[in-house]
Image 1 (tube, rainbow, N blue to C red):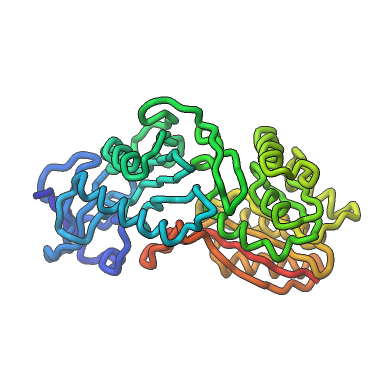
Image 2 (image 1 turned 180 degrees about the vertical axis):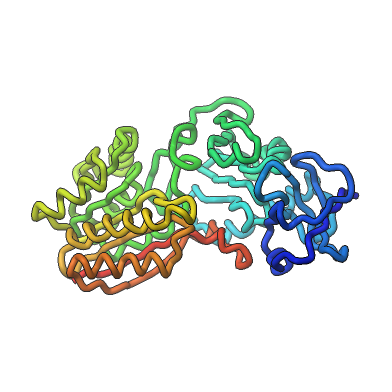
Length: 392
């Protein structure tokens, strides 16, 4: 039915235990003609079937598996995968949120694809050539399945260039106002699907934002790297006395103020346009203090080579954050860097605590929300570390 990719005998058995990626160096030979993005069958060196996926010899990841069943890849296949993803989200996403991740790539059996739902709109991100060919089918399926009013393609991620794909942001069909309002944990948030970070918003922290409720009631809160103020709004909504939201982006600070206004928290949330590193350094040396310090920075490392520098960055902000936390208060801190493991992140926090001369009690260690499931055989799908720690 499809050309067949034979894997080398001497490779590691990663694919057999469930990982969906096959690197070019693992391929022994290919029977049949293939072009970038074509569907292929994958077998081991002896011809035993392993899966069906799409191939792209321009990419370091030469084949991404779609199915472990020897089946045809067509519109019906994608409809079934999307229905499976939707079924999980119906169970995993609370009724007080209408924004969530519908498809999380490899974890949902659709490698190279992200679909985020924002109310009656979807933001779709395609990272691989083999998936790009099915964009039209995917857009039609999710539009009909969820009765959407609009879909935007947020294909502006540099990794697309490694697949030979252009960078672009465009409407999949008719145009609409890409600035939309959504409900997250009962709070109203404005999201810019065209210019916002990622697909418009950081959905992976949705459950963690709700988790802070018991720690912020009646507290003074510092929210650094606040982006458009999601943690700040949640803190204010859960009873914080005063919240300071800090971000370097003037556009993000406008978003903080808009979201504070949306929820009636303009007197509680103070938005500050500043480099968070500078703010933390100056505040920690100036006698300031907070009951709760929230640190949710962008990824400091995208590869293994930059992990040492990333460790220094994480240590710096957490050391400053600990110094700013009143004794008995809480540090709420995150890392979304996959290449820095949970154990390494906790190690960085331990080093920061030692240098800050503070005792730190870890109350909770969490990850991304249930709409971002992890595939056990693919550790790359687990990336977010979220720690709540009491500081003395």
